[in-house]
Image: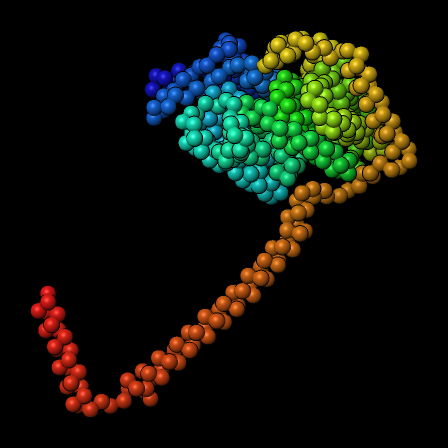
Length: 575
């Protein structure tokens, strides 16, 4: 019991979790202050721990390491704390107890996952993240959000079940529960089934292609603050897990490359700008997955750090516009620069950063991934990443600020964002520019210090390469707009891969239903025919006119009675 208590005290995630439960009993007007204090306590605890392993527990003879702080987990833990604080300030004054609880409990679970030193602890926090995050999807309280939340929860629980199965199989093969390098293949180059199951569990939470549409279905249906929080933690926990367990897995290079490309086309035709940003999540996570596949953990971790800040800033800016206007549809926005100039300026900072403009956080982190592709001598992957980078500028760097604040004039003249939103967005923008101009504090957190020591983002090559890319992307956007070839923003529903379920999937289901019905009718016809034939035979034998119903001679009955008596006597003698 003492060891358990010490393990709990050693875990910053437990501090946040306990704080979340205390929130349920606190007066609502104290929620913001309490959440900031709890986040500060958790951050202080993390800094006090330093690098090492803590909170060891012995369970059924197995030692569990509930807290492991190493360079990889530390960079994720640091940015998670920054994100928690920014989200609390952004949502200052929020009185919804369920959302306030999830604002602490969900990030706590993600933090516990990245600090987990064993697979059992990872599984516990993995499931906690699924359960606590769904409250943010359900928060609006409509039937649509209820159904989206149920789908979201089912997919997250499926990921957890696969993770548990992978843990059991891995333990059976290795006898170890350590959460460290697992690898997809054995020493003979064959895919390990146990690793494949766990790989799929991480892939679902990372929103791999064809496993991704839960992001677009759930996140935009959440509340303004809920969508921001959801955009940060789930996929980044999965990215961390891939970086921990499957670095250098070449399949991740190709999976990640596809992830960087396909969201661009959906985002260009999407009318809901919050949904555009969810496609940006798929795209951005794709860059991180490619980096993990190359074994460039600095690139994956550094870009995850940056993406949490600048993509969160874009979600915040769009959320502020939605808060003032009540909509995030491109067709219903535009012209907001006239009365929301500060929000517009902060949004542009986020747009420049996600586009990797020199002098921003995106530039000093994305180059690590592009360079890894070049050093890996994979020309087509390198070219794909460049194309995807231009696509990011088109759909997130330009489309979000352009259709929110410029484009056509919607006639809306709302006030600028509230003070809490301004402070949170200002802090995120300051990090985007500050770490973009002076990235050394971020580089000091990188997992591989030997590799980062030789990296210099502001070389002539990096600057020319990126500026050329950005220039041509901007020119392409301008030409498309002038020629009216850019996809028009119209009220529409983008089904994405859900089309497979709703159109051919529904047709296949209809065919399967018809085939099942026809098969059942045929089998039932055969069965009922046999039963009728059997009943007719029984009737023929035992019916009023049957052989068994006729009169039998007395002598014949006496003979059979004697035979039966003899049989009974024989059996009695043998017994």
